[in-house]
Length: 130
Image (cartoon, rainbow, N blue to C red; front, side, top):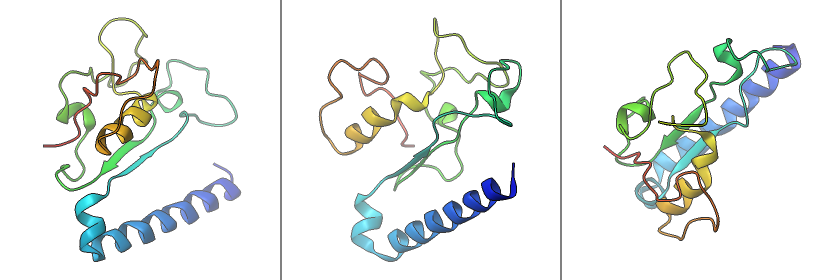
């Protein structure tokens, strides 16, 4: 949470806001475009290995497009995935939405074929619509 980090977050947030405002103003973009935002991992400080600290494993995964409820949690929209709440989920059994699903989600929204050999959202079963 250094001043440089917070400055970078603020600048990024500003640029994302500019992009979303542009999309909202243009009918063709608003009706046919999806924006997906995520990050590579969570973390607090220089390390993110403490599996009991939710900041180390919870990451943003946001989808904006027509038909997606504003502010909705992806776990509310798609009951096929487990909401891990404040526990780091194991990689076996019922799974949460993971940011590794973003490639196949984007391809699904574009009506394109999935990433060959992928295992995350390979069946296009992550539903982000109402």
